[in-house]
Image 1 (cartoon, rainbow, N blue to C red):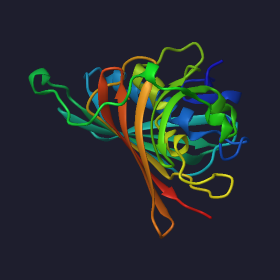
Image 2: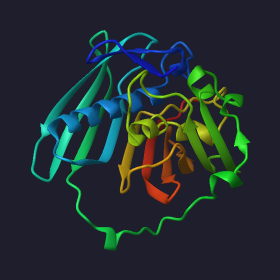
Image 3: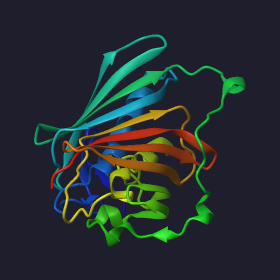
Image 4: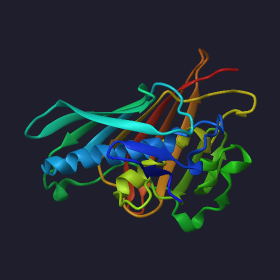
Length: 254
């Protein structure tokens, strides 16, 4: 079973696999991020300009019950080499998630490609870890994690979403990977989530390469301040090495 079923061109029904971690009666935001990424890519495909997504920024405006949602896409800035588009997820006409994507015309920079970001251990060198030992919800049960924990709030891990984004509909490797962009906040916690709440308000992704393969790698550091704020900083990896970054701002609530 997929995370969502399409009801019409812009409306989708979440399945049980989207059940949340903080509240099992609400949708986990991670699968919705994957679905919205898919819809942003569909909008790009319609214009057939060949642009690629360089940045995705998601602002979480509210919670989503396990009920149908709708998605609206609009262009904020058109151009010959860059464009900015926006997608919004609605529940009963209430906006709950909004994303902005910078689209960039690709150029051949093969002879310039490289990064100083360090790789993480390969998949077969990491033991299986069950995030359901900490988190509730059916979404958490739908992902597979292999992790090396260095200390609370610091870990390297590989993740795979075992369910497709949409039932009977092909999505890109980016959209499937996007179902995992929100998970760093829960994969190496600094505090017991049964005692301290630390939900994230956003997910901001920068990519210099598109993900490939089923598994997505993460190198995550979690920081808590003394003022109720926190930040997750993650380097993203695929099987070939680092591909980008994810950051999340946290509100810490004892």
